Image 1 (cartoon, helix red, strand yellow):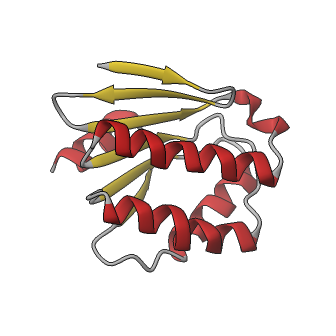
Image 2 (cartoon, rainbow, N blue to C red):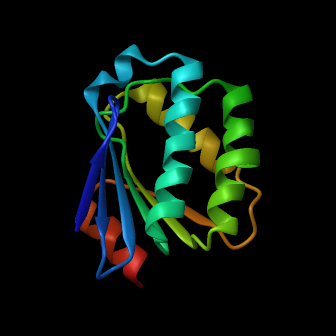
Length: 133
């Protein structure tokens, strides 16, 4: 296991399962769209550094509504980069904040990357089991 951190996110790489775990922190309440995009670009760097096959995103503390143009940008830039890096699945733990969760769901629905499966979960272990299946 290898750890990293930014102001808004903790990162854990599970070497045995080749899963990159991205844990959004409560500080996301202070995110702007520009900072959010910067955080997502960091995610692509962590993917390049660790070479995971799957990603687990813990969005339980995520409190930031993702605007529709940013949802499209995520699909075009971030999901595309993940697919090129060999990511097959992204499991996302559900946000406790309704509007933020709705925007995450809309972002998932906008995914057009072939071969990239995204799914929302209530429980971490269920998400992890799905990623390993």
